[in-house]
Amino acid sequence: MTGDVPETVTAALADQQVAGQVCLEAGAGVGNTTAGLLTAGAKRVYAVTNDADHAATVRDRVGDGNADRLAVVTADLRATPLATDSVDLVTAHGLCNVLPPADLNAVAAELARVARPDSHLVVDDYAVPPASAAVTRLFALENAAARVVDGRPALTFYPAGVLAAMFADHGWAIERRKTLLDPVPWTEAHIEAHSDVVREYADELPDVVGEPLATMADNLVSAIGSERAGTMYSLAFRLADR
Amino acid sequence: METRALGDTGQESTVLTFGSIALNWLEQEGANQLVELVLDHGVNHFDVAPTYGDAELKLGPKLRQYREEVFLGCKTQEREYEGAAQKIDRSLNRLGIDTIDLYQIHGLEYEAELDTITADGGALDAIREAKAAGKIDHIGLTSHGNPQLIIDAIDRIDDLETVMFPLNPVVAGKDGDEYDYEAVLERCESEGIGTLGIKAFAKGSWPPTDELAEADRPYANWYEPVDTPEAIRERFDFAAAQSLDTVVSPGDPKLVKMVLDAASRSEGMDEARQRALIEEARHDDSPVPEQLHH
Figure 1 (cartoon, each protein chain N blue to C red):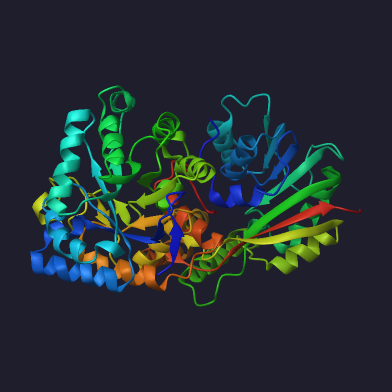
Figure 2: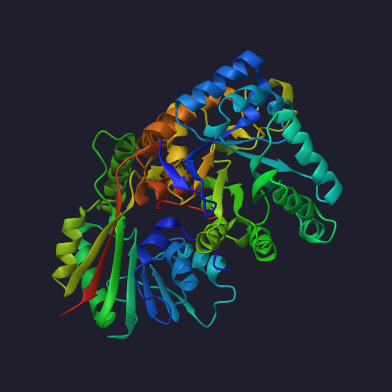
């Protein structure tokens, strides 16, 4: 069993050679793309995440029966333990929006290092949500809380052109762009998950600061419910030159 | 309204088929008006069944008036020769017509039923006999069941010309063979079998009867339907974008006008929006925790 594979992942991988390939899922999250890569017949998937909880979730979800094909690696994406020129296909599904601008370049360099010449890269992410969208207020609150605690934003939405240009700097030639979701359905489950992030930051702060943040998150969850807003795009690249 | 070839039957069906069960809930005058409204929107494919209360009787007058303009599908839940032969004659009689354009084996659920239907003395014998006698023109199948069972039926019934099955964003988003109606669509496309989509407007099951008594449900559908113009337009566009030949309207007459408008004004749906609907339906009951992303 490989678990449910989201339509976004299936659509992003549809025009990629996955079967028989060594793949790196950069930022494994809950394993959506790892599941998609295994379903599509990847020879091996390195699911890399810096979050031990995510690593455990991925193992639970797709580990069974895939022991010879799946390696869940807990590592910083700026310095992975993978060998140079060892990967045929790199995927970064919903990764970049959780990378602060300061880290983005180092991650792109590392992905280019581990990728073989002529290998492929798929980057899926969200366009900047419309300023008028209610979810924008929740994301702003998430970022405010993250900055107070960590000194860096939790979420950064990069326009497709910005990511295309940044990866091009590392030798990735863009081959195609497609829209994965239009609009993006931010369901109650997503809204709840993002407000949980605010609450986790709030817990690390003195009550006098943390409690109002948590209350604001609760109020936004009630006010938003669910919302359709913005788009999600997919960029595919080939490693042409380093 | 757009028309599409119904497989290789030679019929060009409108992309919306009128589910005539809606007539069962109306008095005759209202039923006549609804049929007129449906025809005014250009719909040329109707579907009915003997199990839909008085729907056959109430469809009769307007069907006879406009017989040349309507391609009529009817069905039987009988599995054996005798019952099926009787039901064909009964439907012809209740509808007051000489020929049913498409006669469908209705609600196939189990492999054993397929054995009975296709065996000597099975319903299929009666349906083929009726076809030879000119009482019906084409043979079809309907099922809410396992997609693989539908594919088995296609394998075992050489003269099957159409199939009717559920398709909506909720079903499309579920993994697993028991929801793989896409495989049915592909098979039908490769064999020239016509496809009719049902449950396109289903939102979900009704609440349990101890929470909402059957008598208190606001719609006559088997399931709770979407019921706003926007949601109906979206569900119609989604179903019509799945390469179905035609989409059957929901069973409650209160919804039919909105569905007619949706089908008349449909401009298709791009893949990014189809995926958005699937993902929206999929996420709220996903077993995977902590979903920040799609």
